[in-house]
Length: 432
Image (cartoon, rainbow, N blue to C red):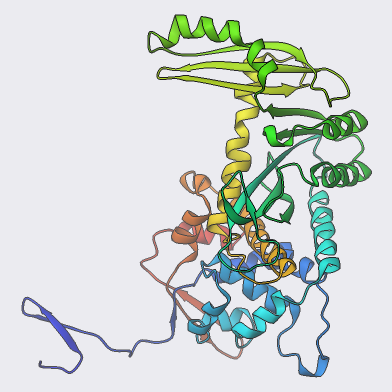
């Protein structure tokens, strides 16, 4: 070996490795997140709602700094509190946080510092923050959905759920179907039924919205797990519109039997795809009054697919309600939950205490909301391809940039890699 740093030869070329480069970070776009926070003050807002019971003389890291560190690291792809162990020398993160990063034990104590009352205050504050964004809107769609979070330890209220067949927590989200914003996130014990606490929390959400904007029209969109008598009573009380899935039963099967037989004879036997819709009134025993219901009887070409739903939307046919409105919850709600769960790491609820895990869900939700703000900024640019990016693509293509930092008495220079492909998009965003 001609040089002690030579690790191998590529033909006649020696390939050498050493640690002589300057302090380089792979998280150069964290300055974009700082610009976003300075503009919208989202982390600052929530930090004011978090109580701090520590001894003032011993505090090194403020609540706002701890929350900012946790949210920014989640956005950059660092999902665990102990990731700070290999990030503590990152020059860009230290600059953004105005000093050393808080250690893993400090962050863990922060996550475990909130009790039930504090979590409730955060949830009410979250709802108020959402309501403050509704100025000028005449209509909103509230998507309601839940997702499973499998647990693998002895977390409090981790329970067995027969539907999912696992020990889990139950994450429950109210989404704005038009903007993708989280209206309020809720963590429930693992054995919770879909509609547990549903109507009581929805009533608080609707009442708060109507208190500030009494003329705004609200439509609820959800799957069959959220169809129940108290919901229809609430809808009548507040004049809500809705489209809700219905679970099949013997009465509904009898209603669609003739149409099913016809579709089977005309289309299924021929291997033809076809959708047929019928409408009818139906009242379950617990419902306060009959509802307008619909069924989709579909031949997929290889089998039958029958779906039922109830809706009080006026002036629309069943096909239009289903395809132009109801199924869009797949993009506006289900895909957004995937982003929160898989890309903002809300499935990492590995603390022991239930309320500390609820707080983790809220922190992941703040990271998600920051990404929503970033998506809105991208929509204001001329980069059409980037407007379709999901959170993981934004992180990979926009946030992970090699960079160094140079600090003088009057200026701080973030020097980003010349090889970065999306320089024009980054410039457009950082100058907004």
